[in-house]
Length: 398
Image (cartoon, rainbow, N blue to C red; front, side, top):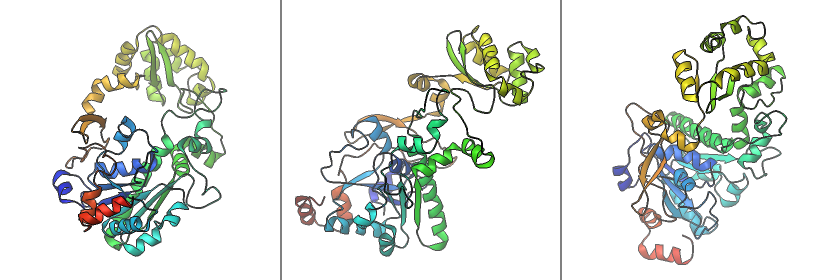
């Protein structure tokens, strides 16, 4: 389901795909953003006269960055006529994305079986807090809750200082990205089967998967990871070190890089020192080694050390504030942000896609829509007359 204007103005891998977006806040919109940025037509379904501002102010940076490129249709899904309109859209759509609590979709008539009876090729994407079934399925789930229950907060922060959340909504973001990956898998499978399927993930599952080696340490060996602050928990020395004018990161894991670091600091004797000679020894003597490195790093500026260590092949880098990050020449070269045009014909800046394809461009070109901005055009596509649209508006169906 692609409007003529959208076909003419958008390019990308997914230009023949239509997504009905029922999601709110962050995890669902993160999934949908991946599809929209690469050409899918996305119709954001919104409640008429919704003033809740879940996801922040509509003109704010968070909402604009998450919902860029979409169309907006206001629709009261709790009304019979509103649900009928949605089901008409399902007949022509490819994907429906929702992040309600698991029971809500059944109450609204938006569950997978109902949608598949309308369109057997439809793909339903469901993102929940804890999964579609199980003892916690009915609990409301938010990113911080998932960070805690997944164990992430137990390995974040300084030892002895208590649990610490990560500075970004990692569970929301990872769940959204995994859901988008699931969509692509389902689309690929549909080429052969001709049928859609139900794609599920949760904040909890995604966050546990993102623990990666920290969770694997327990799963395989029964080892319970602990907080390590700014130090890497297993690769030593890797961490934050004080310089003459601030701090920097150094990552000298592995014997080859460790020996390069020792020589760069003009301490080749560290290589044969029993306290540092092996990875195990460096782990046991982490604090002693960190103190020795800090005694070196405080004698030069961060920039001086970065130049010197990079010349020696030792991974290192500055620790930026957000404004410093955007000013960095490599960041500017990568074009991590770009301008889009909002509904008032004004240019605003959002984050670019981090994926580059050699032949195909992404289709990021316009900002988030106004609430209900495309309602009339979408209903006209479905065959509704102006008088019918006016009647629906009067009844607050749209």
